[in-house]
Amino acid sequence: MKVPVPPRHLKDLIDQESANISHILGIVNSPAPVGKYLHWDNLRHRTPPADLTHEQWWLGIKFARSSLSRELPMTDKHGRPFRFTAPPLVTEHLHEIDSRGSGRIAMPNEVTNPQTRTRFLVRSLIEEAITSSQLEGASTTRQKAMEMFRSGRLPADKSEQMIFNNLQGMEFIRAHQGNELTPELVKAIHVEMMSDTIRDEDLGRLQTADEKRVHVASNKDQSILHEPPPAEQLPSRLVAMCDFANGKNESEFLHPVVRAILLHLWLAYDHPFVDGNGRTARALFYWSMLNSGYWMFEFISISSILRKASTQYAKAYLYTETDDNDATYFVVYQLQVIRSALHALENYLERKTSEIRKAELTLRNYEGLNYRQLALLSHALRKPDSSFTVNSHRTSHRVAYATARADLLRLVDQGLLDKRMRGGTMYFELGPVLIDLMKQ
Image 1: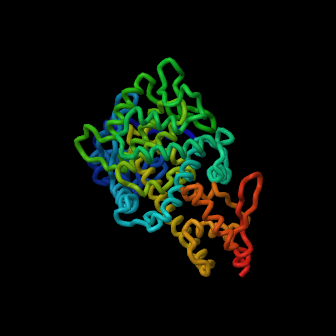
Image 2: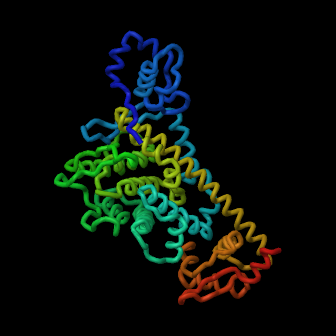
Image 3: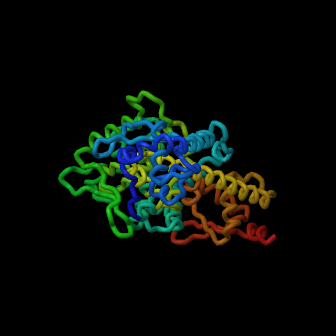
């Protein structure tokens, strides 16, 4: 990846086009032409309207954006403020997220029903842990990571440790929702995310002026994409970021979803730790969303969407930095990611609910099966080679060991599962009755 081509300085363009500004403004009045918040690096390849040049088109867009923009408390390493613009496409994204993400209008039964809620929560926490770590270079497959969680075994290598830590970090955030964000809490989140993957002395520690500063480099040629602020600025910047997260000293309303996204951007821009800055930034986003009442975000994974388009994720940062600190690029991209994640959750819930209903139909003669047992049997019917343990069942549904064991042994009594002992562990596989049902 290369740093996007930055636009010419706005003052230079105004000086150059001073005689044509009225003409330009008569043609261009939208901050987001063709419904997109375009950066100069993209705009320069498109056809401008009427008789305008690309630079005249860009100047008109910048004027349209300036009338809607506001300065943010966040500044760059030179003290220049970041800005945010709210064009109609941002309002549209926010409206849908408000409708779905807070659950005030649409609350899927699967995540409000106490019987099913835990299973979907566990799934989403694990999914976010896996994909967030994979974004940062973890090489373990999803299948191996799921096996680690379900079996209850300890991580076998650094990649698995990264994923394990990410799950611990997400649990830590859930436990601290409702608390104000403080520098100590940010550092504690970093400790949860990075334990046993970096030196103990680097856990939760801001970089200092006497060490080499981290930077963001291209994976392809190691060219520098982002140089964060100098280390001596980090303590005061962290305090300012926490004040922003807590909404202190603000004179005008900022939408809480935008605040959460900007908090993500702020930590990633500062890059205060030797490693784990991306994971910590995404964790802060979740903390902010949950603190603002968007409880549905316990059930979605933004990293699973980000991983599918990691180049666009990186470009959203670079577009912001190369266009006068315009954070709108990052906000718009993240809003699109959030909407995609919410739709992915809805599709997942619909698919899983359908699978459970099919299992109920197949097992209609077996009364008294609880939701946990139906979910396991549904999985077994779709994947006959699967095996289960008490630990895997307990992890999937967050129940006590005795409850998980009783679930499985009852299915053995009914002939739906078989029990085998291997190495001192009970394994449960398809029983003769379930095999006959599948044949039928």
